[in-house]
Length: 156
Image (cartoon, rainbow, N blue to C red; front, side, top):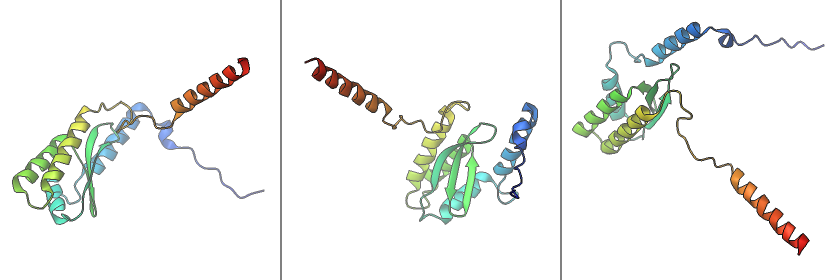
């Protein structure tokens, strides 16, 4: 006999709706906190962008646990979720200051991602919907064409 212990059941699956909602709010509150207490989130993002001006930040839409759309700004040593309004304020200050080369491009990207985050419904599909690239339709059409050619050869 083996000494394998059974894995415990997933406690998240057994939560009630109210308990799951409370857990989601607590997780979101933890991730929404600034890294340093008493620091403005917008100023923190601006200082991080200016400090690492030679690296391109990764700016993307993200959905938090409460299914609210946020703007994720990720750089070396900095990763935060901003609301679309906060992202627009960061972009506005970047355009006004123009503190580093590429500030206008970063501001434009922040505005675009904030628009995407506001347009995306919180309950709707993937964050970045792309056409299905599996090739299923092509394979079906190719099989139908091959079957038609085989039928024409059989009856000709």
